[in-house]
Image (tube, rainbow, N blue to C red; front, side, top):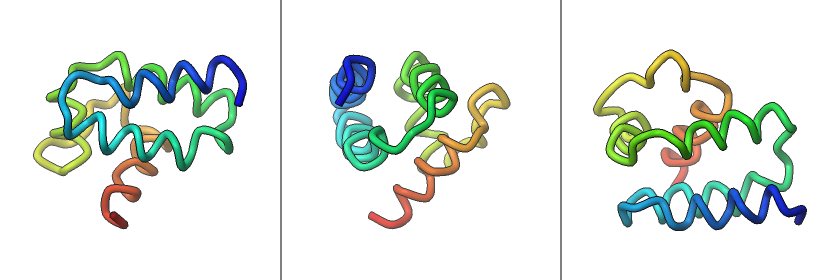
Length: 83
């Protein structure tokens, strides 16, 4: 795994709230290796968002904000649904 993916994996496992650490960490472990550079950019941007907003978007309490409503968010929501 290259340095960027290792950094994103670590960040996704240490987000701030435990629910996101688990969900994003498992998602990253499963998907980072196959993500394109564009998808890595999307995931990295998502990790910069507020933890509570991310959780609300993923579990469906709120619609994802337009700037994060992309293929990575769709994959994350789908991943959550298959868990």
